[in-house]
Length: 221
Length: 227
Image (cartoon, rainbow over all chains, first blue to last red):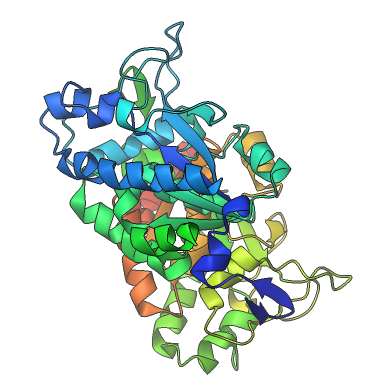
């Protein structure tokens, strides 16, 4: 803890991930993105980093549940179950900035829209759905902020994919809502290495960022 | 205009900066940060870079006003007029290696935008205490009322208010466009990595490109006025 201009600032890993005041958001770890049968893999996108990070996220979630950390999920959809298109034009602009092999068409309620079995939600977890109309933030017009406030959450570990999309955007939004956005290096990933690295480099200048073992060690004590 | 997944989006520079649907915001170009003896100067900031950015913003604003483009300002405060502290721990985390940060009290000279790029009659000025100028301010309502589609983001700091406001703007359903040579930061490394990420997500242009697009648009206007 440090005082800056009369304000308490949490600075150590123990303070920043204290179990009763920390929540995790698992972002977009759904079949469409992580499975070899999902759209991106079938279109030839490189999902190896997303597959490789899954065991790290499993360890994070297992340890979180043992320590009593609140676990929440944000699941991306592009169409609701009635077929309405929920994508937003300003978010589509980015597609022309890189070679596009795949445009998401995830429909609510389908296998593609579910979080992968390895990380499946358990009893009493919280799940929210977000469309591109949410601008990539799991906190924008979802119930998560209310849930966090009711539980006196101070820190939000933003995990999942993609680092340079919904993870970064959710972290920025969490900051607006006065939560510490926390990044665990092994628990974020992307299909786009260059912007993944740029996003991590920028986030490191603003947000607490830890290795997985630092967080797990803290929770084990 | 291009179409993806059945949705049309603005794709070209001309479409994005069309004066009828664009607004511009000048963020954080306030006396406390960028005047003489300011935080920027004390931190050893590049004075020549700052001077040229101020001149470029000034020029962009002049042309924008001539074309009737809505001009807005985000002025950051850490304390309201009753001196209530608006700083939060999560925002200060990035300053954890410093003992104090600049205090900016609403209504003081420190809080005002630099005279050279100051607001003029008809502009919109909002004050904000979070890093996104869209968060809990009337800016989004103004954009909606004026039927704006795209917000051009200029000012400081690239890796702070600029990036966070761009992210916030897209959340509310507007395009955010960065003018690469009209944003500045105290931290060259953070400036660089923030630009690197933003260039993968947002329309990003040089001021010359935007001015050229506006100049061809003005050509149309003059033609219609003279005939």
